[in-house]
Amino acid sequence: MKHVLYLFAFMAIAFNGAAQFNRQAMDSIRQLSEADHQHMMSLLHIDSLRPGPSGNPQAPNAANADEGKANPYSNYPDPLILKNGQKVTTAKMWWNKRRPEIVADFNREVYGKVPDHLPKVTWEVASTVKEMNASVAVVTKKLIGHVDNTSYPSIKVDMDLTLTTPAAAKGPVPVIMEFGFVFPPGFKMPPPPPGTPVQTGPDWKQQLLAKGWGYAVLIPTSYQADNGAGLTQGIIGLVNKGQPRQPDDWGALRAWAWGASRALDYFETDKDVDAAQVGIEGLSRFGKAAAVTMAYDPRFAIAFIGSSGAGGVKLLRRVFGEQVENLASSAEYHWFAGNFIKYAGPLTPNDLPVDAHELVALCAPRPVFISTGSPAVEGNWVDDKGMFLGGVYAGPVYQLLGKKDLGTTEMPPLETPLINGDIAFRQHSGGHTTGPNWPTFIEFASRYLKAK
Ligand code: GCU
Image (cartoon, rainbow, N blue to C red; front, top):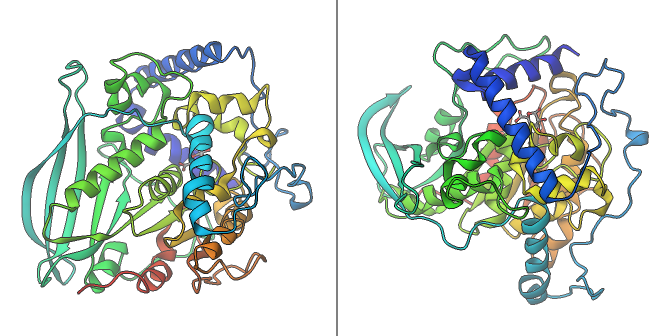
C-alpha cells in the first residue's frame, strides 16, 4: 500500500506545482474545476456519475486487482472491421475508411476535436548556451513559443521548450522529446518506496548523447493547465475566447499533443535537428499525452509511452486498477472531451465506440514502445496487463500494414524486453518511472533512428 500512497502524495505535490504551498489557490482550483465539471454534466443532461474505485488497496472500495474479475466486458471494437460490418483487408481500406472512423470516434467521444482554426506559434530562441553534460559538449537552446493571441488578448500563452544537441554533431541529429513535469521551487522528491531498485549510471539524456542523439523537454502545463479550472485559459481557453468547452471540444491531452506538434514545427526549422527522426516520451498523464501525440501527428517517428494507464494505452474495458469513472471525475475529466464523462453514467465503458488498442493502432505503422514498472513497486493502478493488451490488440493493424506485432499474446515476466516487432513492451522492476527502461527503449529505437 505504501507505494500507492507514495504515488498519490507525489502526484498531489508534483502536479499542483507551487500551489501546494498555497491552500487557498488549491481550493479555488478545485472549486472552479468542480463547477466546470458540473457545467459540462448539465450540457450532457447528466445528473450523477458512478464514483470510481479507490487507489488505496486497503480501502473498502479499492480498485480491483484480481485478474479473475477483470473482464466482465466483451464488447471490444475490432480495429479491422468497418462500422458497416465489412472486414478491412487492404492498407488502402485502413487509411481511407477504417482509420478515419476510429479518429472520428476518439475525437467525438474520448479526447475531443482540435479546433479548425488555431493561432500561429512563433518560436523565439531565448538563449543558446554551450555547456557540458557529463563529458559531452552540448548546445542547449531555451525556446519560447509565443502563441498569437490577437483574437483574445486577455489570454497570453507562451510555450516552454528546451533543446539540447551534441556540440560535435556533423549534421542534424535524432531527438527524443519528453513531456516534462515542473516542480515548484524548493521541491524535494519524497524518498522512493521500499523495494525500488537504485538507479546508477548515465541518465536518459546522457544515454541519448552517447548515441549521438539530442533531447528536448517540453513543458505541457506552460500552455494548458493540468486542471479543469484551466480549461477557460491556456490554448483551449484562448481559442474559446475564455468560454467553457462544448462536449466535443478538445481536452488537455490533445492540447498537450498539439504543443508537441508545434515543437516539431520548430525542429523542422532548426538545422541541428533531423525532424524526420524525432520521438516523443512521457510518463503517466504525460505517457497518455505521448500516445495521443503519436496517434495524431504522423511526423513523429517513434513513441516511448511510460505507465500511461487508463486514458493511455490500457484497455478501458478492463476492470482492473484505474477506471473510466476515475477519469470522468472532476479531478481528471479535463484530460478528455466532455462527452467522455457519459461513460461513467448513464453509459458504461462497454459502450465506448473505441478502446485503447485502437489508439495504438492509430500510431501504425510507426514504432511504439509501451513501458511499465513492477506492480510490487508501482502498484496496480496503471494496470500493466491492460497496457500490454493495448499493444497486443493493435497487432493486426501493424500486420496489415506490413509491420510486426508484439510477437506474443502472453504477458512476459518482469524485465523481459519484447523489442523485435514494431510494437514493443517491457516491464521494468522499478516504480512509477520510465527510468529503468531507457536502455531498452534506445536499443529498440536504434533500429529506426540513426545519427548520420
Ligand atoms: C493519477 C491518475 C492517473 C495518472 C497519474 C499520473 O494516478 O489517476 O491516471 O496517470 O495520476 O499522471 O501520475
